Image (cartoon, rainbow over all chains, first blue to last red; front, side, top):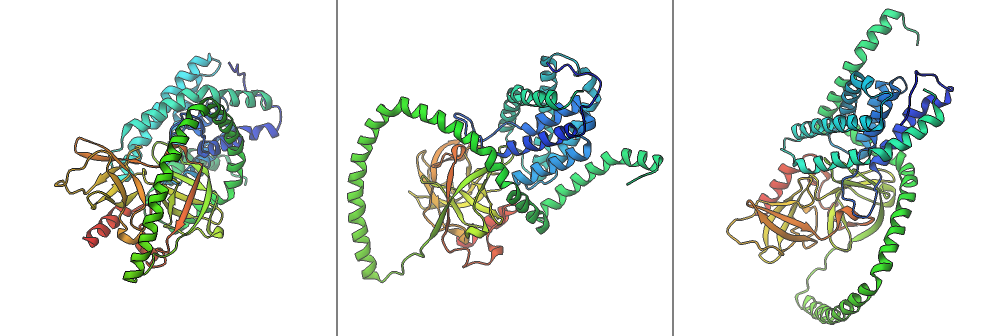
Length: 171
Length: 295
């Protein structure tokens, strides 16, 4: 999937697509999905967008934007731990930046496996962080379930992002 | 803003640690219940509610279509079930009418002051925290519709939680399964009091139960009215079982498939100062204190 060359942008309007699409994915993360057989936990679409753009176009999803979008997600979900997602996303972005060269121009399976690793690390980190902040040992099962769900839903999110990517950006 | 190259390089190098620091700082400030953060949260929810509704609409349409197909398949069996249920409910209706009449005459005899009348409004759910760490929902009714913090949120089946934040056009409901939810309840059969503590799982646990009285799976659990948060007697759920000494409750309402909720003002918020209504973030100690005070 998504053969990406060196960044060559079509024009200025397309450059807002990463930030805009991540914003939309943040909103979708908090919209009730009501899908039959779907539990209270829904996949973290926001993380998919952060991952995708950090792998392909980190220049168009700068850390400031990741911070603001993470903060927005925290405000929308009403978490008492405002800033937790911002922190997690920033760390995830930094980590992905270090390993992104292994994912660019590779098969989708590799990208997906990379996401599996990143999502697992992110959820384990959040689990520890929220557990520490709340002073409770949190049940790990919902976290494991959300990780699985997010990884399983990645092809859906990725398809949308790749389409947007191809339509608006050349690199 | 134009910066000289060395300044810009320094700024870039410092940006990440700065942002990480600000995030950590916000987490610590957020724990302290800062008013500005609450305000920002409700303002963001208010501002984005139309966007969320717009995104939710096509999703709701898809799920409605799927539900319709499911309904069509199940219609014959359901019809038979409904007939049966209808017959049973008619009997109950008769019983209820008789009891209502009896109740009225007894009230008349004892000159009992009637319960405060409750006002309610229905709201649609537009947002769902959806994560593994939170159990709350956002509804499309707020202060301008008369929603007040601390109100009970119910479905036809039973209690689902309470209003924890109110914006102008949205309100957040802290579900009874959330880690920060602590609701004074009692076992209806034994009138024994307990605190219903959410732990982010689908089945919240009953804490501070007196171990002497045996609890049986299937026992009905209702609110006990302690702390003035809810009126006594609202249906909450049934005891689902005891595992490793932890009693868990199965809520009557299906919290994973909420569409509309009823927000009910029992007029209790007015009786107590705002500070007496446990805020969503530090309710544990207060909830406990409320239970103790009742004893």
